[in-house]
Amino acid sequence: MIIATSLINGFQKEIRNKVFGFWAHISIVPFSLTKSFEESGTYLYQDFYTDKRVIPEAAHIQAVAIKAGLLKTRDAFEGIALKGIGNDFNTTFFQPYLKEGVMLSTDSNVSRKQLIVSTATAKRMDLKLGDKVTVNFVGNKIRTRGFNVCGIYETGLDEFDKQFALSSISVIQDLNNWGRDTVGGFEIFLKENNLFKSRAKAYFLTVFGALLPSEYAAELRTDPLDKIADDIYYRMSNANLDVQTIKYQNPGIFDWLELQTMNELIILSLMIIVAAINMMTALLILILERTNMIGILKALGSTNGSIRKMFIYYALVIIGGGLLIGNVLGISLCLLQKHYQLVKLPQESYYISSVPIDLNLAWIFTLNLLTLFICTLLLLLPSRIIANISPVKAIRFD
Image (cartoon, rainbow, N blue to C red; front, side):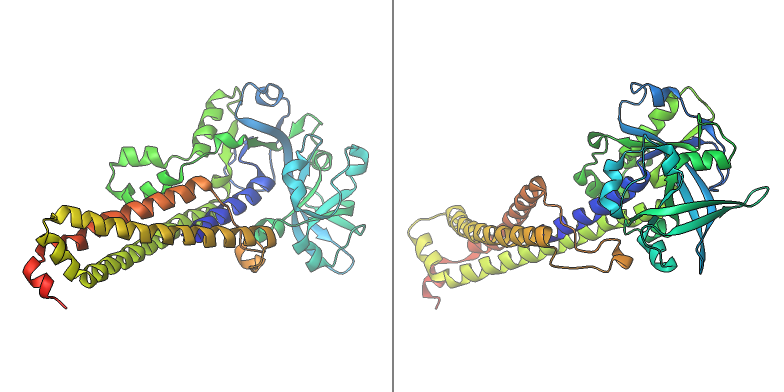
């Protein structure tokens, strides 16, 4: 159970961090009826961008712009979405995914010629650091811009890696005939304490969500991210801007992650059931082996309750030993995997190269208490057989 919980929690956390690291938690963009890469611009110096008090939940806000183009080399070409970033781009979130090269220069004249591509794009187009490429942009007329590959990144999320390359936002501003005070939108990275969502709440909704009245179930299902996005929308002074969460922009990935909660719940339930059945069987065997002793104790005046307590206490000693061994083995294996990545995964299928582990001491403690409570509760059933044992027959029992 420790391994299953740590693995699934680690998997969900790792994938979310990858998505948030590239796209941020919330985007503020001009209203649009389509999801086209051809953006309409908006004014850079919005109230929430210049005054941090408007969105106190934000750890960082950065301006971006996106434009579709055709990436060309001498021997190949491929469609690409150019994500323009400026000096306000927070490299802390993106730096772990930069596998080769450097980030874009802070000098706009230098960064206009720089391009960061993904490893997937680099492999398909046989690109290396320092290679020169061109990107054609289609509008009223075809315009071409030349770049040098200054970096290669890899998030492991093929849907993103295959599509996007990073360059200076000034390139897109020039292509769209925007001024330096016009951008495509804003990305908001939230503080971690605003993203807490109880795992117990997720389990409760998975099991009992269908039984709750619709209005209560809807309220409980509201994700903290959605609530923050709604609050930001009503705080903004510009009614022409829309607030979108990353879950809204990429629902498939997050729906898939939510399914892992159901898988985790099923695994934990099956393991607890197996553990409880094993302990019930062990207690029955103990009672059968000590039938003669039970008869003697009853003949000497012991009550059914005192004998039941004795057997349950002995069973708890066995459970305690099992919990101790299980915790040592489970936590040790998790630590080995966390530090040495012994078990690998195909990244193209799972988005990560090794099995991720997220050891949470609070959850380990909860698992131990839950297992102990359920097993103890179910031990009361086989212990009831003691009341039906006749002292005369039990003393004769062999």
